Image (cartoon, rainbow, N blue to C red; front, side, top):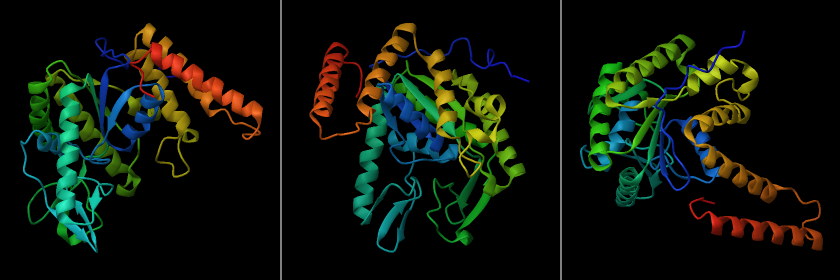
Length: 311
């Protein structure tokens, strides 16, 4: 039985074009989709504080960027410093260095949100880890002792309260921004299959409650788990969608997000990308040199005619 996709997209789904700035925040699936946006020639800021799965620390990042929240604690792991407000990909060899790095990345986030035409938020899991000492939900536990945290399934109402504040701050400085939420299709099975389902249900409730803020929803979860619904479209871990699966989501998204003119421009970008990626049998040969020069000329000519395309 084939599941129809005709009713999955809202009628007023936003449209963007090359030159529009995009911000992507959230789980690892947002980074998967950033690959396709950049490949198609779009300017994208992807998770400046690293991949974050839980909606509350994700909303806090936005509030921190606008000076509306208090920073969380730093953690020293041997000679490395990390923050409970960011992923482990953001680190420094000193507390002062991490403080400066956090400040810089939050400023990047703020500036990007002030200019962005589109914000896409990918929600990963409603399971969170709350520090017993401060009572705050962390963005990442950074392999600290489990005794420091209480694990919880955060209810949609609490997550909604944080996102109401974050969306309000964004729209103060950028009232025209289009905001799209999606739920990651990644199964967090280390929590357990039933627990994963409960987590996703809270995320769907969150999206439903946030619709009062005029946000849109993109059905990445449904496309992977209900339309494709085949483990051939997952990596060998059975959890993360494969590249063909994310390509399927991208093909669906671009038909909704872009005008015919933008789609035509994307096709031209992709032809050039494929020419650049063509594997040369003898890369040192004169013929290969001539091919590389031809591709370079075509790319430079194309970009001079279409300066809004990011390469």
